[in-house]
Length: 258
Length: 258
Image: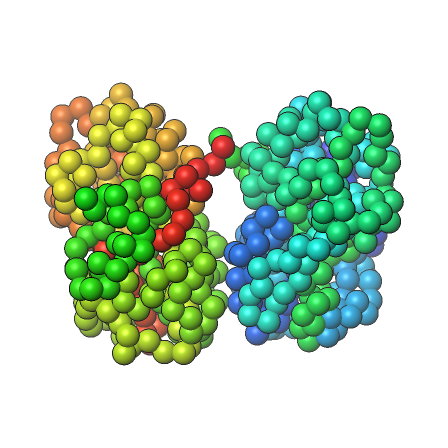
């Protein structure tokens, strides 16, 4: 079972070449978004994250040039299932490892991922449609601007989960307790106010049905940094492929506030 | 009454030259630690803060060269009661303004201060000795190292408040709810385990009595960044004088987690 793998076992499988989404792997262990930038852009990004903590909650940062982190004992160049490579803000390649692209001046940022609070939603009896379907969560660029930092700017990206109207309050309460992994929703209902015209056409991931009596609930999303890369065009960047996360050595429970 | 001043009124008073500790000013408005560094050291410090969030909770960061911040509408060069100036890690001067020392390459960091949770302690019935005495809180360098970042390293600095044994749990619970202003204690009792030989001889601030039946409780302290400056010796730095804080335009309640 994928769920019973340890983080190092899951990483070994991805290192061996398995390019699958990480949902359901290594249950209880925290998964993270990855963004890798040259050191010259690292301050702007760390400041961008400080100014936009809902979408960019920093869990760990490597020392410059290092390929592992305190929360990630594996090799960041090989141990995610899939990577996206950006040059001057253009997505140029998706690949299973980035060994020969790695440079001594790179800094890797690990950012909280909503997979952590999805387990808590399920435990609280709140259904999570995309998990039921076995698909990737739908994600949308919004008309809300992040607070810029230096040369970095970009739109807020959100993920959407349909929640039955009588469970919206529970979903808010449960996810509020995980501020390090996006926390409470940024918006409940009214997708048009976020500039989302068609829920069936997400910018990333796959669409899910919103049924009668359900409300679309929107959380800040860890793809926001990659949207900032596309807008701001640093010379070079690497991200995870959406849904293909870094499986860390941290426990989900570490990010639960009392 | 100092307590009823607005943030801008308090800042105007300090700008006019009043060099007094800010405890008791502008009740309900958040006070902050200040650290100002040249841009070349700013990434190391922001990473140091990310890695040591208990002692260095970042509330706001200026754009490079700017003298105000989103949370601080005043002038950071003049609106604190007193500043400390460091050159190559040596404290060279304490002064009431730093106008002529300001440079276009400076970045100012505002960090959470335990004054915010002291009001909550009082409301919960936990006495705060140094407030009763009208003195500055006692602060100590410890034998615990912060996680280093780039060229920055230093010891954890803690503040100490004596708490009656039957109220320690309340003090922990109340301050846990303010993670952005140092949060829960890092240590309860046993000062010798922190390398503190004599509670009556603090490294910063003024000593307070620990009475029979009271336990010394230690919180991470916002003077930690200045201890890192003294150890790591960046070419130039400015901090607030301990206890002489930046009175911000944020409300204490904004930093209370649900």
